[in-house]
Length: 115
Image (cartoon, rainbow, N blue to C red; front, side, top):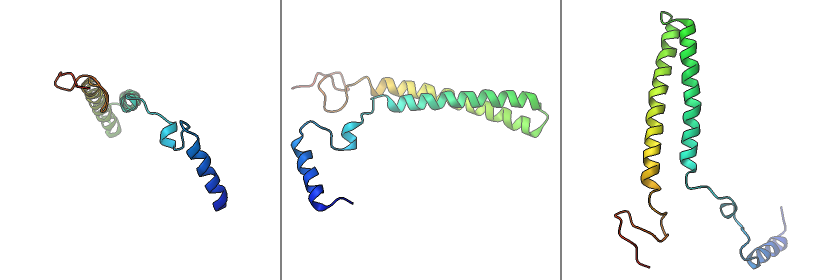
């Protein structure tokens, strides 16, 4: 554990270095569409799982309980993933059609902001 004197020295140095990031939040930026990219990556994985489930269901046959469950899983993941992708694309267009809060530009109703 650093001594109080060393900690005070670091704090003084940190306060004198204007523009140098001091907190983790200042060092790492997250893109505006990070959540969209994460959802799309998840959808790609789910699509692969659905395809593998369909292949396994076909190999086992629909008469086997495991084959029927895998076929149901495949169909479920396929439909939910399609809905998720469609919804993510829709809300990306809605949410990113306007400038982020605090920036100049048009309001949501299309009226130009003053300033």
